[in-house]
Length: 57
Image (cartoon, rainbow, N blue to C red):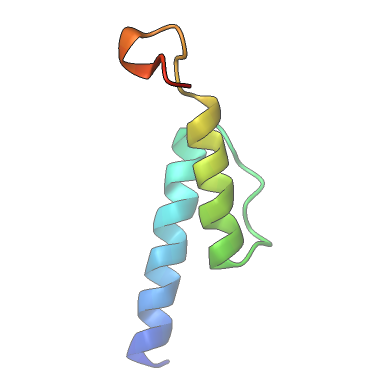
């Protein structure tokens, strides 16, 4: 296994860990880029739009 493969596996595992903390558990069959997009979408859905600092949403 090459160093680049290990690094990519680590990055993907980190994104999956972040998704699982946010309650998304079906993450095994996605590419890294798809996981990053999914993480961005899940984080965006968790923004509290009623908060004064997030009124621009």
